[in-house]
Image 1 (cartoon, rainbow, N blue to C red):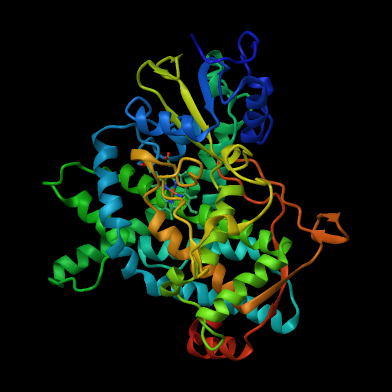
Image 2: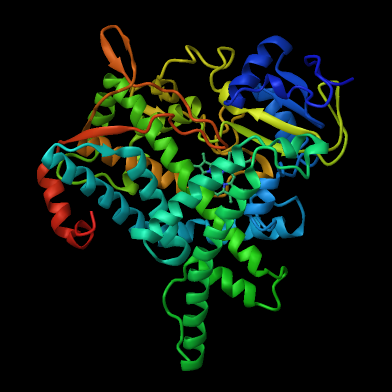
Length: 502
Ligand code: HEM
């Protein structure tokens, strides 16, 4: 007995029921067919789960049945069919997962790269400051994307993504994530498999060629430096970046897994795509919510003022003492998870809550709709970070134990189980410090909020753009108004080398 679902058409199944924002379409269908329903997307069987209990059942209890990711022509083509993030469950994925979680993205390496994050946040603040001095507007969404892209770029190959290189990097990331999320009929209707009705293939080829030229340039240059060092007998003393660690692994004949050059290029693409957009998207939503909720913003500033004061800029090490900032980040994850659905594919038939789920079924857990479900959250559509604070007897607000790290199934922005995001420690460091420093140093005045009027106040329009990740439909453009001139002036003097390329 399959889970309930609507009656489909021949060939297309239920494809006609999906709008551009698929997580919205799935939420609407769950109102009619319940929290677990079944669809045929063309010829591909699919189930959609929309409660924490079902999330736990599919992603934890039955995780061995759902260990693989969705595959598509876009993914295969753009990732050389050698990605780690989209790899089927098997020895390659297992090895790289362990290596990334404990080595590449483990605490030691995250701490090693802390100065880079500080430098990039300072750089971001300086850009806002330079615009504030002349009353110019800033495309905050774009600057946040540059910030996270620069952090990843320096961790991957010790180069800041500036100038043309930066443009290529960011445009590749945007194009790739958009193409991963686009609906390609060839993936779902079997007799269209070899047709290219939507003209996607040309775009895949163009984007991959652009990425390939860029990544080859960096990898080849590094190989030459490594060869030269070997010839000169230079001993390495400096901490290594990802590219060096990946090339060490590729050259290691005794390694458990032999990396190919395609694996190397796909791994680098995995890091750039997984780590750039997601962090920037969460921050643009958090700032947008704070613009729409001035009382929350004031409360956050009071907390920063109490803990940090106004003679220095907030740092990563302040985060544990900023429970309200932590709550704002959690509340933003609840309402605006940058990846709105966790998806997997089953490798064998199984039973879930009495229903039969066939092998090779596509699973979507709609974490976006779980975050907005009144069964699990009071006033779910209200932005209320207080829901993540708990008060002890002496009434200081402490961060509640409900967390985003995959243990609380009503809040799963990073997924859960064995395929959980390995970038959580990096993302969390970057998110808290950037948000806290921005609101500490600036007021953001929105121009043309393209919003609707409620209670006589302009509020920002909060529409999402479709894709694998869901950023704001309209980029966040603001005029920054500086609040801490002395500290910002000091920052520009200390980091004047950065100021030059603002
Ligand atoms: C706000 C920031 C981020 C969010 C919301 C996010 C979210 C996610 C989600 C939902 C998944 C799928 C998890 C699952 O299927 O259970 C994922 C996987 C992944 N993420 Fe992140 N992520 C973020 C930042 C990062 C960063 C900074 C990196 C690394 C540089 C990263 C690297 C990855 C990788 C490599 C995977 C694939 C893991 C696997 O298949 O085993 N992510 N992420």
